[in-house]
Length: 411
DNA sequence: TCTGGGGTCCTAGGACCC
DNA sequence: TCTGGGGTCCTAGGACCC
Image 1 (cartoon, protein in one colour):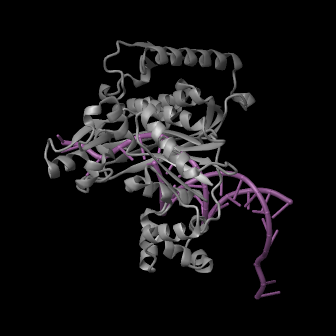
Image 2 (image 1 turned 90 degrees about the vertical axis):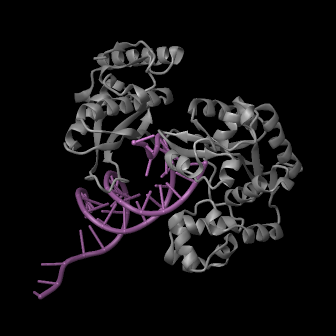
Image 3 (image 1 turned 30 degrees about the horizontal axis):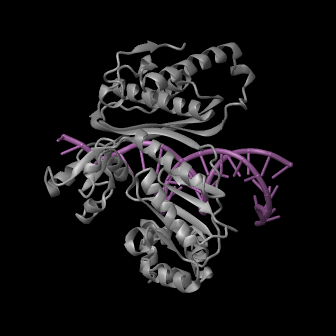
């Protein structure tokens, strides 16, 4: 059997863990500058949707109807680690799927699964202080469905187990197709127009028809719903990409402003990679205008370059990103979003260097400087040390508004 | 007049997830 | 005034090779 634990309204639950007075009140957590990324049950009942911009929320519900909190990802990450390490001690194998979810394998475990799951949820609630729901079934897709039932109906005592055909059929019949893990907008529309409305309907479709009209993931989904395990447990492999992107609160009109932001994103990507001990070869930079503003001229551009030598050095990455920006920037537009993504990531122990582009001594020197900067930032707070090119950045969202900073130049 | 085919690698874009 | 951010996987089609 396969299980999943899924934290309930995770970001909101973290905020309530810190501030119990938020319990029972409508709470939303905002990310970026102002969009809803988590809602308490009370907020959901009011009809507040995911990604709703804060200004619309105020328009519709008034200034004080909802408590809106700006997200604190570091705190959520810490809380997540506490939940995950509790789970780790109790299962033979697990796969952390996201910040608030993990699958685990109970194959061969001889226990009363239902009771064990209830106990797990109870302990996490008591020790860490966040509510979680547990779903257990033959496959990950079915376990997900089980966890939805555990979340929705208090009668399950936070753990729902689907362990025979009868329960499975009933659960599938009660699950709208759009609630199945892996069904998004596009597939939903297409399935609905073909009369498939529930998870059960999907299991009744033939493989032949599905393979003509859909692709691999949907075929696997059908099998998963029938109890055939198709989605492998993945161990915590290194990330395949790292990105830092932003929607700016105000549109940026000059290249200088954009450059400062891009430099900041590049430095963040580099720092993330150093923490993970990885290097990247491909660098992508994108810039975009505000697509909500049909009244303004639109321009989106992006470009990828391949480095000869993979890097995780802020200086190198910033330099390359600013070169890319130079080549795609166009005057006369108001830019609303931008970002840096690095791909083609390898372990930093296996540095494959090109003989013509490699100066071992220089590399060592820069790497030491970057490491020292990371250490200081860890001890004294993020953004204590940063690259000179990030300086022109608007102070509001680089996290170093109050730190009197020393500036390193690594080259 | 006849005008390769199969394999692999890469990339862009789409779809989906939390 | 104000519209998220960070990921993964799949597929089709082009480039390239022999």
